[in-house]
Length: 238
Image (cartoon, rainbow, N blue to C red; front, side, top):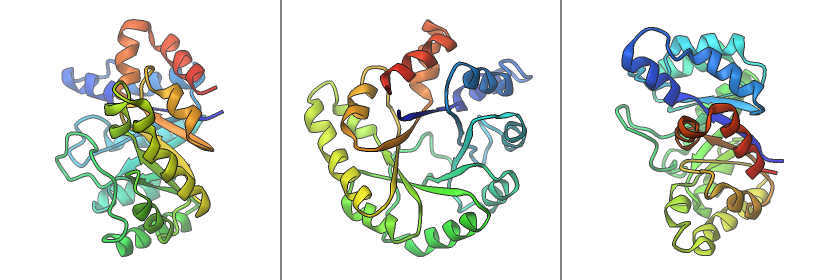
């Protein structure tokens, strides 16, 4: 069964809009684990507009499932946080400093040396590494040359095309996954996966290990309840 890692950034966004500690990010993460999710993902950004660096520290000591931290290692502050908290996995994402949300994967050819440097550092501390990439076989080949253990397929284009032509939408991701497997890479995926498109993606991507889902899942929870929503997403992954 593909694992579900829930990105809790949006819970922190709601808390930060008012100040204080409502909703409680740490309690929400613990509840999500209790409801069956196999991991928690956070993406702390330099401006700390949702998940704060202190949240990451607090979560590390509170979580019982897999902890995945996403971010761009161009910020020394981010690198230091990862080394301090030692999550199970760090997912390297090429976000600009003030970017609203992730919108592209790494150019693993252009940034090869930069990625190698940080992947070696994180791996030396026992942290599994994953690189956020588009469904592009050349970029996946580049990712394999960095020494990363996994890639995370950026699935926005799949989600955008799914309702128009799902076979066409999934095709490049199948090719990308097969290339990754041939190169010995583990496969994660994320971005705009939802209750509508997740099952088809999971059924068609070979040996998919983990999906990271935040915005859609937390939005669905407003209508369906958090426990019920987590269970509904888990059922899509069976």
